[in-house]
Amino acid sequence: MTIIITAFERSPDGGKGLARDTRVRWALEEVGQPYEVRRLSFHAMKEPAHLALHPFGQIPTYEEGDLALFETGAIVLHIAERHAGLLPDDANARARATAWMFAALNTVEPPILELATARLLEGDKPWNKERMPLVEDRVRDRLNLLSARLGDADWLDGAFSAGDLMMVSVLLRLRSSGILDEFPNLAAYVARGEARPAYRRAFAAQLAVNTGKRPS
Ligand code: GTB
Image 1 (cartoon, rainbow, N blue to C red):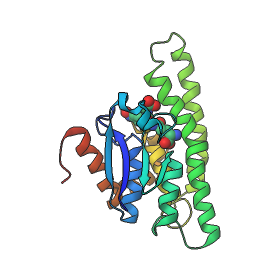
Image 2 (cartoon, rainbow, N blue to C red):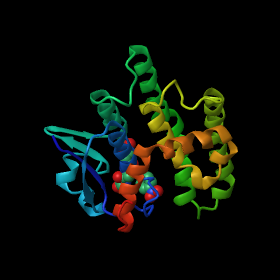
Image 3 (cartoon, protein in one colour):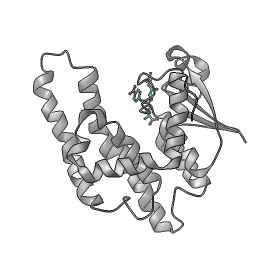
Image 4 (cartoon, helix red, strand yellow):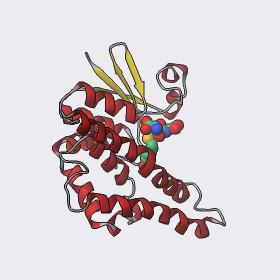
């Protein structure tokens, strides 16, 4: 059955891979599932046809036969549960990998999104200069403990899993802030994720769409 995901017609990041279709593409590449992409303008995302798939009028969505999903956490978990390659066989290890997915989305991503909002949307506010260090420190608080937990391991809990896919995807958003480089083991962790052939294919595919360059 053909898998169809949605993505920006043109991502505002110009192909840096930060829009969330990249994590879904990455998951599909890891498990070797082909997919098609329906690209949407900002206008089309708020039209009834797309709102029927995504109640908040966002990307990405995922369609497979009569199943339609939104939310990258749910989509990546669905892919990981249906296909081998992103979750361990052992039931307890699967549960722990799922916990890392939730940790990425619910514990690590919120302060990173707050930082992105403070930088992109609030930069011109008179109080921004005073607020910024507080927002940055809330990111550092999370990264400090994540860094301590990762230590010198390659991945968060044994072999690479959907938990790492989601955590790396979330941390990538931090790169331009310079904060990731304050944590060398996390910077290396992200680089290991980006070096995976499946990530590279996913990145190249979204880059091609956003720049018109064909994947090499
Ligand atoms: N919780 C949802 C999920 O995980 O699926 C969040 C989905 C979401 O935020 N979608 C964004 C969207 O559709 C695109 S990915 N926004 C349009 C809208 O809400 O109207 C977020 C994103 C967008 C752009 C960049 N960038 O340019 O750097 C990075 C991330």
